[in-house]
Image 1 (tube, rainbow, N blue to C red):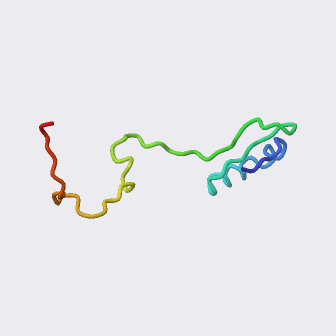
Image 2 (cartoon, helix red, strand yellow):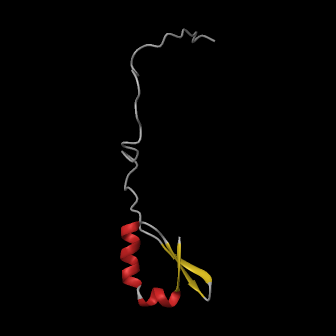
Image 3 (cartoon, rainbow, N blue to C red):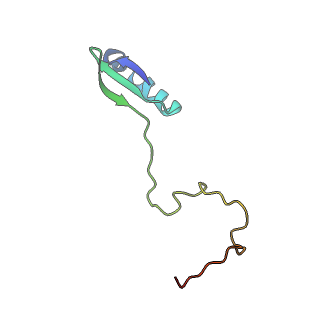
Length: 75
């Protein structure tokens, strides 16, 4: 994570905002050598949870075929 002085941030604010949006890397802004704030990219949250995990599950093998293990459901 990159650290810059507040004076440098003030002079180059818009350019730094574009840089963060393109790279996705956050920038820490320091005042007198101490971290004061962090400029990070905006991440849009989904409006609904339906379909939020689409494309994250991978099926391997046959999930419909019966398994060869016998078990007793009455226990």
